[in-house]
Image (cartoon, one colour):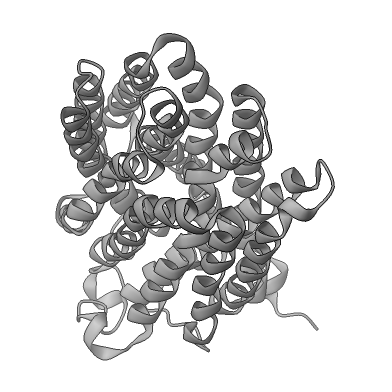
Length: 400
């Protein structure tokens, strides 16, 4: 007979769902700002004369900024709670976006993007704690999958708005969207976000100890996630340019396709989260996602040789697969870190990811310029392939 724990899921309060919704909206707003520079690449490259490597470097400024502050924001969330970390971070992101709208100087624009990325990191580090704090273990895969929708949702919003805004009204108007979104969400979080109840330190034996010293589990998940960033950010950074320059799409429909692919990827994260809840494992699905990511990047490498329309379908599939690991890895990190280390561990998780993401713009941009898109995509496939043997064989959980 099936165990009761598999027949009945733990109850989740309406407040938990509402906090999750606010967290998703908050991180989506921050993601719109962080991903905006990537969707300026076609304009910067074709009309402003920047090379792909130069435009990619400018686009990487926001992710590099996040690298500098993710662990610090996580530590603040561990110490003071999530509400004000997220609210203040979004307000600072809005101010940085406002500064970016006032300059045409590329150096100053890069500085504004850098500072905005540093501020936007607050939602990445703190919103994961909201999920783990408000949801029971057997619902966290679903909840974290929904929470991880925020990144592709933010990219979707940026992809369907930024190229058109930039082409018709300029870079400043395109960035102004982030001023409005982040300012609004900063206010909503300050008013409505409630910190989850915190368990006593004694609720989980060893939860206050440094989990990085007792096991290699977190280190391995961090490395795996960093490797899996390469296909994800290659597609989100250069997918639009590939459609326009190689597949000869117009900017507007290309942006819509990128947005659709990101939205489908967001739904995929939820499906993978539910899968992990039912399987009772995060690392098993994570291993299969790593294998799939390598396969779809090889498919992208061969896409140019396929009939018309097939490259778009391959891009849609590749984007969906490339973002599927994030919720699994985040949930695994939060559970393995324990209540006293969740913010710092999630900050470290994102730090590794965004260090890799910061390298994607200039490195893959230069690689595409040197060997072309197909070979560059094939080389990127090596990163998820390298992640496969590094995925731990068993889960680790000291969260409850």
